[in-house]
Amino acid sequence: MKRGLWFGTNWKMNMTPGLARQWTDTVTAYMQNMPSDHRLFVMPPYPLIPQLLRDTEGTGLIVGAQNCHWESRGPYTGEISPALLKEIGAHNVLLGHAERRKQFDETDEVIGRKVSAALHAGLGVVLCIGEGATLKGKQTETRQFLEQQLAVALRDIPSIQPERLVVAYEPVWAIGVGGQPPQAEEVADALSSIRQTINQMVDECVPIVYGGSVTLQNGRSLLTKTETDGLFIGRHALDPSTFIQIIETAVGERSEVE
Ligand code: PGA
Image 1 (cartoon, protein in one colour):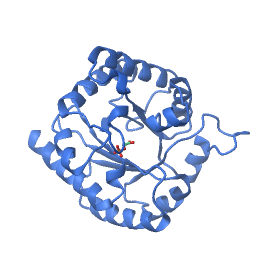
Image 2 (cartoon, helix red, strand yellow):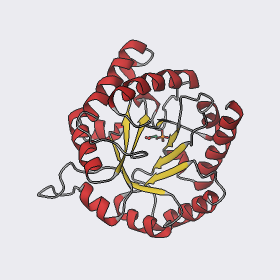
Image 3 (cartoon, rainbow, N blue to C red):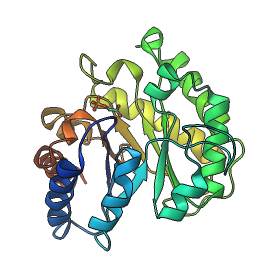
Image 4 (cartoon, rainbow, N blue to C red):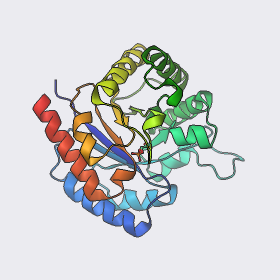
């Protein structure tokens, strides 16, 4: 069965208001002719969220945050609550990204609390999971590692409404400059084991996307396997034309496979 594909990007600590406007103008123009079953999402830095929401209203672009706290308010200097994100109109939030896990010591437990809080607040969640370099190539251990990440992150969630949860498989060794993206077959193996685990935990069909050094060159082959429900793109989506080209080639490839 044909399923809509998901394409998202995390801007990390990049972009300016001016560049953001150029990006949204280009991407929303493209979206007018995009098949309606595909979904596009973007996670800008916090201060740009209101601008993006305003500039893209009614276009279907999903605008989210890159992080949130697990409490809805309180003495947490520098933090942002899921309740506030919801109130300003953000659609979803990225949780469990490898950079947050590594640079800000976020554990599976912390991520689980955040996932639960965000879903309870009415936000969608893009949950990142992925093994590090020490498990590269070790299938059984990788599978157990991913299962554990999912089990803790999703252990206290409310029943999920359709499209409120997306899981992004992002092996740590594939992310960023110097990252080595896996072959489509390796991605498909990891995604089908993630799918098995999720099916035991959540009733809804949860889209599972791949992220980590997705480029114009490899985006097409990464989507040849029907296990992959979409792509999550970092640095190569900062240029809106490249983002669109990746989507177009990947969607074209998938329609040939299906
Ligand atoms: P990248 O980032 O595409 O630049 O590797 C991916 C990510 O961090 O989600």
